Amino acid sequence: MEVAEMRMLRWMCGHTRLDRIRNNVFRERLEVASISDKIKEGRLRWFGHVKRRQTIEPVRVIETLEVEGRSRGRPKITWDERIKQDLQRLHLSENMVHDRNSWRRRIKVKDY
Image 1 (cartoon, rainbow, N blue to C red):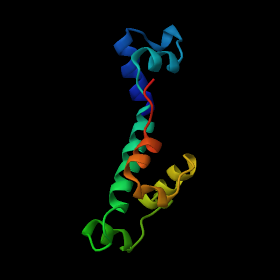
Image 2: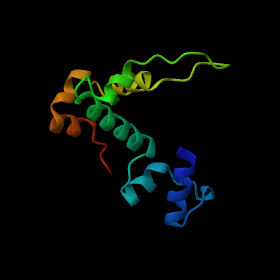
Image 3: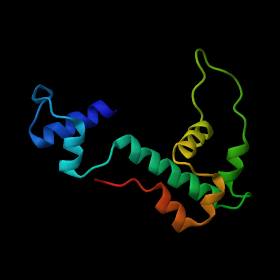
Image 4: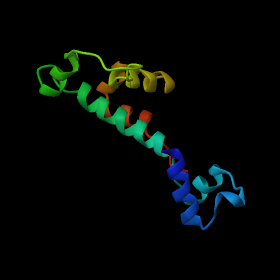
C-alpha cells in the first residue's frame, strides 16, 4: 500500500525512483501524511465512536460475538488486536474515548 502511495506522490511531483529522492521530501512538499497513519486514525476514530455507544446498541453487541471455525494458515489479526496495537503505539487507553474532543486531538495525524 505504501509503495503505491509513494508511486503516486512521485508521479504528482514529476519524479521517478531513478531520481533517488527520499519519501519524506515528497510528503513535506505535498503536505500529506502517510496513508497507513491516516488509516490508523480512521480506525481509532471509529473505535471511539463505537465505545461511546450504549452497550445495548447492535454495534456494541457484535463486539462480544465469537467467530466459529478456523481457516488454514496463520490466524488473521482481529480488529480488537489491531486496535490494542494502535493504542499501545500511541500510549492511549480505552478509557480516554469518553471525552470525544480530547480523543480526537490525541488520535489526529498531523499533515506536514
